[in-house]
Amino acid sequence: MPQPPSEVEKSRKTGFARLLAPFTDLFGLTRPVAVGTVALIGLILVFAVFWFFHLAPPKTITITSGTDGSSFQTFAERYRTILARNGVNLKILPSHGSLENLQRLYDTSFHVDIGFVQGGVTNGPNSIKLVSLGSVSYEPLLVFYRGDRPVSLLSDLKGKRLAIGPVGSGTHTFAMTLLGLSGMATNGGTTLVDVEAGEAGKALLEGEVDGVFLMGDSAPPALMKQLLLNPEIHILDFSQADAYTRRISYLNKLVLPKGALDFGKNIPPQDVHLFGPTVEILARKDFHPALCDLLLEAAREVHGGASLLKRKGEFPAPLENEFPISSEAVRYYKSGKSFLYRSLPFWLASLVNRVLVVFVPMFVVLIPAFKFIPSLFQWRIKLHFYRWYRALLLLEHDLLGPLTPPKRAELLARLDEIEKGVSRMKVPASFADQFYGLRGSIDFVRERLEEGSSKPQ
Image (cartoon, rainbow, N blue to C red; front, side, top):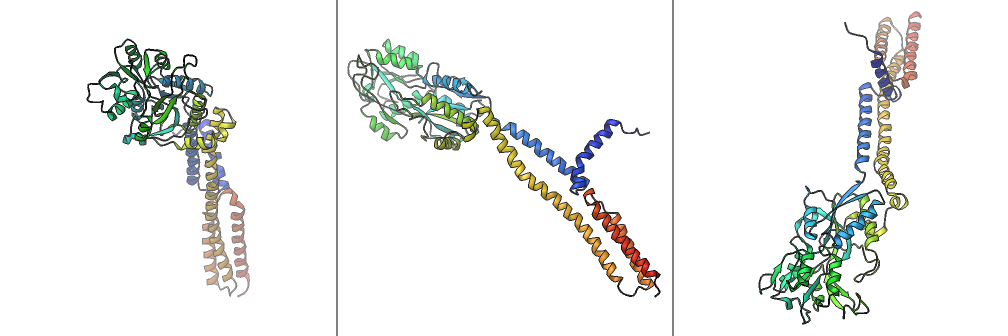
């Protein structure tokens, strides 16, 4: 024998029925439509909650930087300290420099979000996969050499032993470009040594190489300063700096002023003409917009001051090279941080922003939609009422003429059909007054028919 439903099952049914009641009794929806409406609302709310959490900025981002002690690594360490103030952890991955950073960003299987890349390392078709958040500093090329004779042309080092940085670094890529322009990359007896910056500096000091190419992506600033202050080592003053910047669009001419390193010893003894690209922060296209603001604020704090080669406030800047500036970065450079992130703590601004993005549009769209659906079904129910009222009005109109027995029988049959049709109607509680009003009208017409039959014909 089937068991009677338990109290829990009864309560569940009662609870579900109560949930459906506003849709069936008040809005006039049929039970299947009410169930579908409740299910649709539930799915929308579940999706909204999912999307709300999906849009949350990650608490940890990964940057690919440079070798230990390099300016790229130093920048990343300072970024980590600043981002930590807002509850964001920055994971730093050391690398050989710009080229390896770029390769990591291109490789979607490699978990990295942002990276430092010097301009000019690529013009490849994959550039569309990445966006730039702007340039944050100049990256001058420093060429140090040994010898008594002053050198102002790169070609003066032809036939020498030159350390050009490890493969994968921006230094190596840039050096090969310049040596190629000077006809020294593949011929002329020049020996090219691919070694790390620290090893290259040591080799120059010990006379094992005649010159070294150094850039901030792979060379520690301390090493550069050591070489600059060594009286036996000289820095190449590029007399053709203007020509290089005309031939290579991503280069900028820079000047290291006379005496800038040591006023007392007048180091360097004259203005040194240099050139180099800018360093960009590159990100994948799906980088979170809220983190873009936070990162650029950190960049402004780290790079916004003055130095020997830049003016105060010159960086960060929306200087576009191979990679397009992201729309969020463009907005930041034009108007700064958005209102919420400017007025509230980062975590609270993120929360409020997601509420505005997810729930406000949902209610703006759903409230009119769910007002329309009940109105549609109420209009449908009203049509049923109007149909039977119309039939009843026509029947009552036929009462105006002579009421013969055959006509009376025919009218009673029509009235019975109307009454059966009305009794089969499924009417929500909100239409009870109209339903009973219709039934009262049917009884009124029936009384008129009965009165008509009692009168003599």
